[in-house]
Length: 338
Ligand code: ASP
Image 1 (tube, protein in one colour):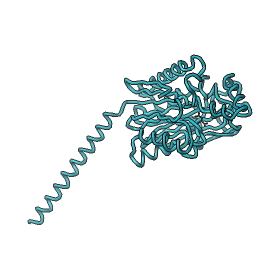
Image 2 (cartoon, rainbow, N blue to C red; image 1 turned 135 degrees about the vertical axis):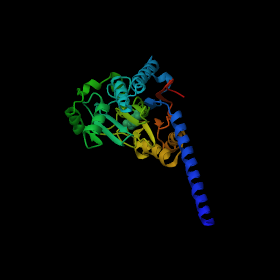
Image 3 (cartoon, protein in one colour; image 1 turned 60 degrees about the vertical axis):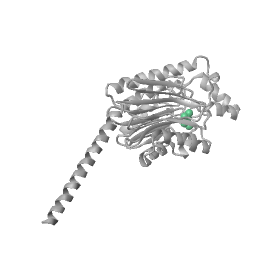
Image 4 (cartoon, rainbow, N blue to C red; image 1 turned 180 degrees about the horizontal axis):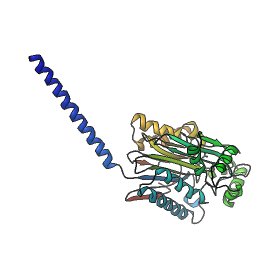
């Protein structure tokens, strides 16, 4: 009889502990949900060594206006419960069409005087991804990247095969001359002359977006013309999943910009996701560590924008400036320098 009573006591105690553990876990979950904003979108328009006085007349205002417009486009979709994937594609397409950015129209030139474009997109909901590298005839490379993700069994298509695939799935096709701007062409001519000039010119204007949408899904995308005077055929980090772009609902959505070779070798986008996902390090500490310590030690310049599933965001850069913006319900901010 005594044994039965003790047994019952133990069972009841275990049940009570289990109940209170479930209750506090539920409370924590509830707390998490309450703090998560309905949506968060971060955008970048490239990191670079440009000082304010190096920018062409009126360019700073143009950057601000373009990022404001990009935030409007994304917010319109996200505030109406739209998919973060649509927000990434719409916002990046808008920036690609704007010639002040190094993506789509206005992209930088290769050493052969051609525009070769790279882009990628990733869905953290299902770890699906699509990318294009070295494409020359697709008006909006981010649309082609999405098509690779949704309409092909592959992740990355390059060059002729990517151009051809994009045409076959209905992407808008243009002549390579569509991407021409005199400013970028002259920049390439100057870069051919001097190595120092090349370093000044190379990392500006790539575009990227990272989003947490109302369904709790994370998405990221990046689009670029690469680096001025790059050797033709060179592909940077932007279309490399895990280097320039990454999204994982259990980690972060991130888009990088900067000297691509470093971002590839150090797998920057995936590294950030791994620190947050596997080590539980806060997004901002992990992003700051990667950009300001790891990348600096390696000699790489650039920055990133990222958002996690709790709606935290981070936008560190180790260059003079990074064109960037963030929007969430009731809050928005656009900046270039510190
Ligand atoms: N990361 C890009 C590349 O290396 C350039 C940039 O972000 O400015 O192609």
